[in-house]
Image (tube, rainbow, N blue to C red; front, side):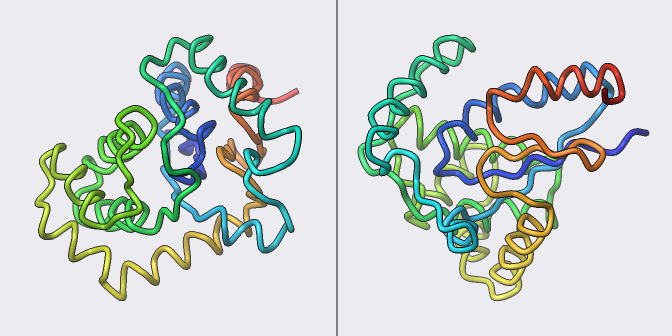
Amino acid sequence: MPAPIDFYFDFSSPYGFLASEKIEALAARHGRDVSWRPMLLGVVFKQTGAAPLTQIPLKGEYSRRDMARSARFHGIDGFRMPSTFPIATQAPARIVLWLQIKDPSMASKVVHAQYRAFFVDDIDISNPDNAASVAARCGVDAAAARAAIDDLEIKDALKKSNEQAIAAGAFGSPFIVVDGEPFWGMDRLDQVDRWLETGGW
């Protein structure tokens, strides 16, 4: 079976959210799975000297318009910029990494639930209790999810996940890697599709 598509993302990334809504269908068209790889953009930004797009003069105002417009263009209902943005995303990222060990089939459901909680329902998923409650909506044990956030082994797993993202060259979210070929951003999904269709060009 072909290797899965690596999807590096931060739960505070609007474009990461939009791409997360599309990547599984794209992958399925080519007989691929998606490997969800949570990371922390704050860690990456220390490497690159970058900053959240919405905080950059001129680019910030444009990006907010573009994010909402892109959601409409791609038919993603309910998108809105959260009242608190950006946020730290250790809590939901650790829950996903914990589920990838405990119950991998549940991990993708929780990725979507956490993203939609933040960018549709305006729930602050940086709060560990909120992140655990969102996971519980998917059928995850809330107390176990909450405990996983503080588990030293899971904290170490997130550290390793960040290291793997940087080693893969990820400097933003979403960052998609197909058979070693990197693509950055929601606007590269068409190229990802073509690359999978043709085997590269």
